[in-house]
Every structure is written in structure tokens, then in C-alpha cells.
Image (cartoon, rainbow over all chains, first blue to last red; front, side, top):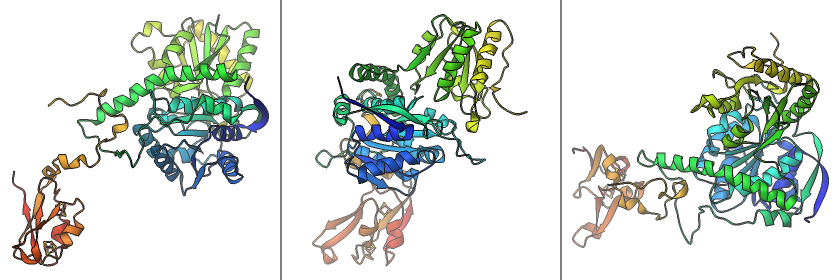
Length: 396
Length: 99
Ligand code: SF4
Ligand code: SF4
């Protein structure tokens, strides 16, 4: 059995620890709340010799991402952490990293976007990146964050994939909360993710050009290649999770089903609130409501088949979204994916209710989600579902 | 000509043969072209230095003053006009392209 040590870590520290145990070669980070402690911890690891890596002190997140593109392009295992405005500032370069097929991994402590200025947690930062060609994990505990960073390297560096990956966790609710985390010996982690450069790199002995032009005769084919890599990543992520479970005894799946076996209605949640939803499901069950929960772990690529299968026998599903897609038919970023899964055969679709919650870290209580379960039950019994997003906890 | 499909193209649009732009005629972009008037040219070499595309060609010619002549590689000169602007003796004319 592999050696594990139990430590008390915040998710920020768990993510930094995972990067250290993955033996990253280059870190380029610019501090931003609530991810700063992760950046500081990584600097500490490098300074005290626990991690033999190059730590690039950059002047912005745009530069951080750019430095990592360079690092990854010479074959380094590259890592950073960021949040909110920082992630948005990085995003120009993240599209490029994906197009260049560089397996950079990022930890994102999700936070609201200005204006008004908010340092608090929600998913407005990660939401617009869903089409950027990045693998995106939503995690719900410090342990899952630790394990997912290691898995993210496995998936990102797989020759069938070669895409950057993000492990997204809730700002403050997770980033600053201490939980027990079983950390793995670096030696064992590296058995799971051996350092092997399989992507195209700059090498004076075999010169290549990267960052080239794709004129109208070529651009389309390269975008399609990224889409194929995304499609491959579903299977690769599943394999990576299974292998991780075999080696280290912890597996999560791409989605996690809770009390779904006989569920008539279901909630889809992600991030920290999946934990609240779990307790709410138990409470609603006590009141006789046959509700189940699906925790969405992999957002990109979207695990369409897994989700459709899990929802097969459900008549109504409520999607608990954590950001507002302003001006869209429904405001949630994930609910739109859930609806579009059924576009080619709506007869298979459950009715879909869209919920917005925890916007700008507005508190969400267990009772709020018990109320959602009850409402879903009413919708299942024939009550009309509003043709818009239901905003939980919004003052009139 | 059939172009390669997505399965054949290299991942990440890398180019495996660096320097292969010599095979691509970038001169087609040009709207104006530089024309060097050899009689006026003092062989100062500034156009050769400033050309961002290396398309001013220095030709050894024992019959020419100082043994050199300057020519334009019209296959690759993209018509930026820098040589024309930099020539200190106005030995380069700026001529509209006619195709
Ligand atoms: S016009 Fe520009 S590209 Fe052409 S020869 Fe002059 S400097 Fe070079
Ligand atoms: S800059 Fe003018 S004078 Fe100098 S080498 Fe070129 S053409 Fe001749």
C-alpha cells in the first residue's frame, strides 16, 4: 500500500501541496485573493528547497500564463494558481495555450467578478472559460482538490488530449477552510504521473516553429483537432480516475450520484454547494420526497453520456448554478449544457428547472435546498416551471 | 490541390520544417514595390540592413562599383516600404503593383 500522511490543509494549501507532489518544474504566479495563499505556499516550497522548481515572479496574470506557455513549450511541467480578475486577465493566453496544445495545469479559487467589486466566492470567473478549450474540474473538498490536481496532469499530458486543465474550487468557502487531507508521497505520485514529455516542444536539435498562422485554409482543422482532444478527454479522465483509485484508494467519477437509484427528481450541483445539497437531499428524503443529487465534477469536456444515463428515470431536474449568464435564455452556465444534451431528441429529456444561487457568496442554507427539492417535487406533480431562472436568496 | 485534413495536420499547428516560408510566395500581398535604381545607389547597405524580411539581396558583381549590387526578391518582398523610406539617396522608387 502506498504511504499517505494526513495533514490539516485548506484547499489552497492542498492544491499547492499537490503541485509540489507532482514535482512541477515551473510556477509563474501573481497573487490575487482568494488564491494568494496557494501562490505563497508554492513560493515557500521553492524557497525552502522542498520543491526544485523555477518560480517566476511576474508582473501580472497575463504574464504568468505567458511564462507558463513558454515553460510548457520547452517541456516543463507548468503550474499556476489564480482567481477572478486574474483568471479573466489570463484568459487571452489560456486560449492560446489550448490552441498550442500545452498541458499547463491551474488551480482556480473561484471568485466573483467586478463590478461591483467583490472578493467573495462565486463562479463568474470560470464560467466564461467554458469554450476556451480547457479541461475544467469542479471540486467539492480539499481532498478532492488535491487528488484532482494530480489527475489533471495525467489527463492534460495524455497524448490523446494535450490540453491545459483547471481545477476549480470555491473561493473562501473552500480556499480558506481547513480540512483533513491525505497526501501521497511524491515518489508514488510520480509513478502515477511519470515525467514524460509527449507534446510538441522547442528543441534546438529538432527545431520546430510554434505559434504559427492558421489562414482560412487551415484554422478550422486545428479547432476541430482541439474538439477531438476534448472528446477524447472524457474517456481519458475516466481512466485517470480509475487508475488513481486503484493506486491510492480514492475515486470520484466524472459525476457523482447520490441517492439517485430510485430518485424521481434530481438536483445537479457543483463545487462546495454539492455538500450542502447532499444534506438537503437527506432531509427532503425524510419528508418523503424522492430526490437525488448529481455532483458535476468534470464540466469540460461535458460528460454528456454519463449525465444522460444518470437522469434516465428522472422527471424533473433542477440545476443549481453559481454564476449568471446575463441575457441568456437561462442564466446558469451549466443549465444550458444540461438542456442542450437533449436537443436532438427532446422526448428523452426531463423537465429542467434553472436556479441561480450563492451569487457573490450569498449564503445558502440547507433549508434553501430542501425548499428546492420540494419545489422540484411540485414541478413533477404538474406545477408549471417558470420559463426563466429562479433566483434563490434574491431580495425583491 | 487538395489540402490535408484535420487528421493529417500536426497538433497545435506546429511547423516541423523551420524556415519553410521561402517556399511560400509572400510577394503576392504587395500593393507597391521597391525598384532600386542602380546608378543612384551608393552601396551603403542600409536597405539590406533594414528590410525586415531579408528580401534585399546583396549580389556579388565584379563589374559593379565596390563589387556589389542590390536586388529585390520580389517573390518574398511584402512591400512594406521600409527600404524606400530608409535609402538616404533616394535610389529606391516606390512603384504601384500592376497584376
Ligand atoms: S519593401 Fe519592405 S520587404 Fe520589400 S524589400 Fe523593401 S524593406 Fe524589404
Ligand atoms: S539604401 Fe539606397 S543607397 Fe543604400 S544600398 Fe540600398 S538602395 Fe543603395
